[in-house]
Amino acid sequence: MPEGPEIKQAADKISSAITHSPVEEIFFAFERLKPYESELKNHRIIKVDTKGKAMLIHFDNELTIYSHNQLYGKWMVRKSYDYPKTNRQLRLAIHNHQKSALLYSASDIEVLDKDELALHPFLNRLGPDILDETLNEKQIINRLQDKKFNKKRFSTLLLDQGFLAGNGNYLRSEVLFVGKIHPILRPIDCNQKQLQKLAEAALAVPRQSYETKGITNNLEIVAELKSKGYKRQEYRHWVFGREDKPCYICSTTIIKDTTAGRRYYYCPQCQKQ
Image (cartoon, helix red, strand yellow):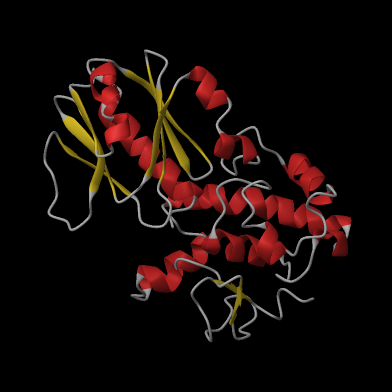
């Protein structure tokens, strides 16, 4: 599943492609949305933004297309009406005279007016967006100490979109490694220094991932590994996907574990209980 940084990167591409001129045509695969094809045609998109893993495409007639990629959704930006060869099902297409923004495989798509957007049940359950520039360490620490969250294991908490929106499997492992927190600990088990370090990581790791298109490892280590011919999947992360490989900091073997069927990775030396 794409995580917050990937959805925001897709939003940037879509914004660049389709906000400069009126929409010439919109296609919805779902019959319930077909009436909006004519309502949105010839209107301008004024903003494309994200909230966690959801994307919001705002039009100048005060309607918004909400979409969530879930597990299999994928956005593509192409030349106008240049459809790729793919076995995926096209769910949404937005065309202007130069570009097309195409959403494949996703099923969670809605068109909302201002009131519906304000009351949307999923959006209203989300915590602060991890890529929101106004989010700061103090706010994260306050949430970590909140009784609603402070007794949840970090392995569960960092996937809770009501805590912080946009984290997923790889960010969970990487944030906990950079924060030097063992996954089975809870906020209530940690001292103030640990919470501060975790809050710093919770901001820094997703932001670096967004800026570097998914790289969460130390960039000096990345540069060294690239110079030695390592592939992207081998240098991209600190611990995620690196089961049985040595930690970049201490050389201890990285461990893989699961919670609720979802995998996470950690270094038992750098992230002591």
